[in-house]
Image 1 (spheres, rainbow over the protein chains, first blue to last red):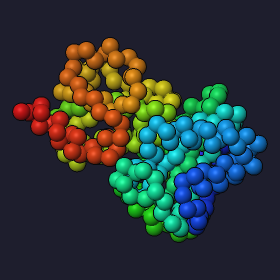
Image 2: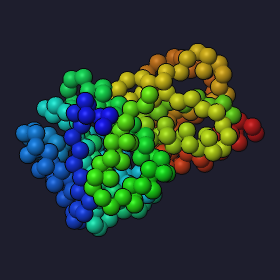
Image 3: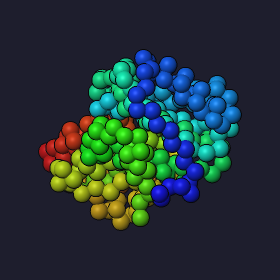
Length: 154
Length: 103
């Protein structure tokens, strides 16, 4: 795997039953706080700050909430497939059910993390990748797909 | 049409790069040439040069924040739109710009 050296933590949930955005955010906060020891408020704040700027739902059921979290020391990526699509104020007005969450450190040199995550965002716009995201049912395949989408050019 | 563009969003983590992909795909589909600079949290990537600016017919700024090094572009025609437009509807955007340039 090309990304091992970058220390990107990936966690997948292909059948999440959150009923709205806030409930999902609370679950993310709980998971990340448990894993890293970062205070829950700081994680929630980072995501809320970004949500307040403009929508992170970019259509076709996809959303990419993200933020720069204080005290976090590595990049974390969560993928949730929601059993019930939720309202996300998306660009196409449709609810979202494929959620890629990107949380990166606020301090320090995180250029590599940022590049890797920018690669993912770029590839999420690709029609072929979008098709694959919708079709993959297997966790390991989904992980491989995410690794492929975060692979740096060259 | 020869296009240069800059994409830049509020946090510079995601939408900057989605807008780049949106514009690239739309340009390809419509038969335009395009070169895109991103100004994200990782800094300026694929920086537009004086030659690029000389080469292009139009500068498209898909930005939600003030761009760095704006002084490079005083001599070229520009269109400024929110970054979401380059993600949501890049094709209509480029069609409109093309029509304006030719009309």
